[in-house]
Length: 479
Image (cartoon, rainbow, N blue to C red; front, side, top):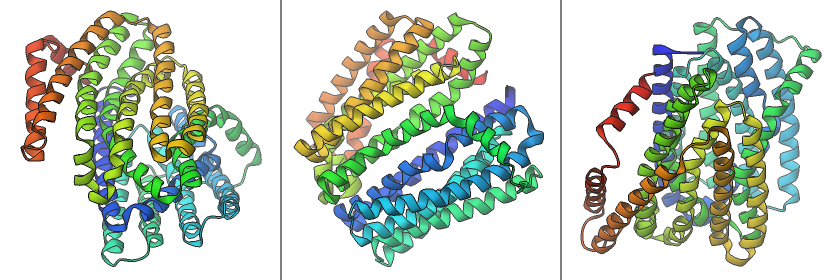
């Protein structure tokens, strides 16, 4: 296991990369939405979501398998890498033609079909890049992955702004995505070659490919469920309600998604420590970490939920413009889904650390079925509001299942967590009342500052966070 300075650097680079990526992605999406409008944004989002569902059928869980194998035995890396790239190129071509046939049979307009064709090229290159990233992860170095992600996002941002400035048709917005993946590919080839002296052995070994697919299969389930769960709502919304509904929905969805950088970074920080204590069977330390993590996550997510619910209309207008005001309704609904998504990161970390990956996969399978059923029931009735309700309900189911199995695994104490949550909720509601009263009287920036200040003062007065808590958390991150 990677420990000491290496672990700290990996955590730092992963956190930094995640935050920068989320920020650039969100900023670009906001500019894009303002420039192309609701309907075109719906078409753009549909094409990305539709093709993203097919990604898992190219990878088949191989990337996760490769990380583990490289970490265990480096000497076979070149042989594995060469055969995996050959397999992914072949599977990518097959899946691409299936995707082309599927979008044709759905009867989508030619503009959207071209978006899917270009997005399909992008995901094939992206999958090869994912394989090279997996090798670097296997070498236990997240620095180069984080740099690559940032390079890719900056490429999309800069070239995408040129497309927007030139007022080219929406389909041209997929050119920056393809160019970004090509640049990342060359970057990763240079890193793997010069840093690790690694050159793939392109010698086809059918028995090895069969072995890789077989061993990767149990990773495929979790990837498949997660992929469908993450993208099927936009696809179904497009088919059942049209591009405009997708535009409003995807704009609202992007805001909670951007805020997930906080639990992602937090989970990345504590996960190695939880793994360590599970390996040492120190259950008391695990329970202490989980209880504290619950407290810190609730401290962050609760005031965000209250603030966004109250200020949803202002937020959507500031970020996307007045024409996206209708997005405030699904945003108010989905911000509660974000609450459950934040908590799910805790449960995923604990279950993975305790070697219960199959339970996580099963939970996502149940949530996937739930969101499909909810979407089919609610979208025809309420359009994008129905999709938002379906998303939030599915995240609730996912978090509930994660909570049940995490509680069975470590039997943490609910009483303290519950009472602290009630305190945090009360303070957040007071903050929310202040924000609600002042929202039409002062500037939005000052309003947020007042809200944050009132919340921090309330937390300090309540004594929810003590000096011992802060010291414990600092020591946790140093391990």
